[in-house]
Amino acid sequence: MREPTIQGDPNRGEPSGRKGRDEPSRPVDAVEEKLRPQRLSEVVGQRSVAERLAIALAACKKRNEPLPHILFDGPPGLGKTTFATVLHNELGVELNMTSGPALDKKLDVMPYLTNAAEGSILFIDEIHRLPIAVEEFIYPVMEDFRVDMVLGEGMSARTINLPLKRFTIIGATTRSGMLSSPLRDRFHMHEHLEFYDADELARIVIVNAAKLKTTIAEDAAWELAQRSRGTPRLANARLRWVRDFATARSDGHVSLAIARDALDMQEIDAEGMDKQDRRYLDTLIKVFNGGPTGAEAISATMNVAVDTLTDEVEPYLLRKHFIVRTPRGRKATPLAYRHLNYPEPLPDPDFSIGNQRRLFDV
Image (tube, rainbow, N blue to C red; front, side):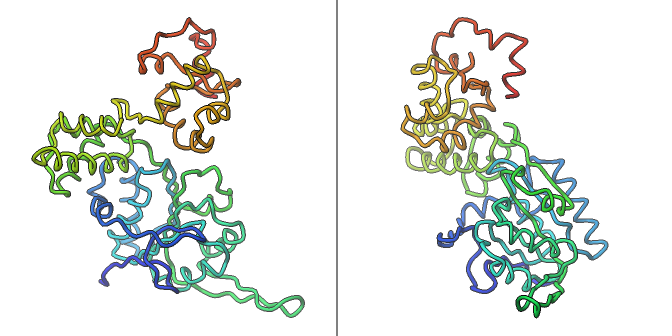
């Protein structure tokens, strides 16, 4: 079998990587690639997803067919790209990687389609950002493995059907709701990735510490897992920082005390919240008396872009139930007061037993 390869732009010979129209190619992080699982059996967590992919892999190998088109969705850092590279390794086929913003027009996507080998994989990150013209252009590609080209204009125009080799498109998105229904329905498998629990993250930390040739205590791995927000990408970032800290301040072994000192230096608390998360809660409680207030008002007070708050800060606070979104704006919960060691406010009718479920579902 031919050695599997990962390719970038087939025309320009660019390295694999995600880029926008005006962004240079992002160099591959060798350490990050080293920490990625290489086989499906090495994947920790997302077991139901992995089991379904194993069935699809076994079936396509027996029938000697390419994988069905697959859509992965979920928050950043949960393994969408990792699953694509794992499937590529399992099949031993070529893997081409690009992103939705990089495919600005039809001609941008043509090299990926015409140069695709039989059974290869085309991975499109942030696929919800594909322009509508490109999206409609790949409909017949996904269904019939053909490209419809229009030559000429007006009465003399004619359509040419260019057959393609059978290959797999794997899409990844953090906002599946922004995908059009026709595109979403053309994926034969749609897998949603969930956040990891602390046990799974602790196992990931221990495995990756061995890959980095670092020894780590089990309780230290658990501490990192507890402060990683259920996200393997964050757990790996925390591990790399703690490893550097242990090398600089100790003998390189990561003990519980070393892990806590390193994370405290980064101002990451026991709940995985960083300085900006706590500043958000502090502003909401001290300036706005716990709310309710709008994100724009909090943004202006903190002098932070509102998009930063809504995309980076609020999702985790909402998930941990430190804030809720009410019809009147954001409001701090008693959990937020307790976490910051502030005296809890008087009982609020919005947080009565009958209203709590309604508020958390807003």
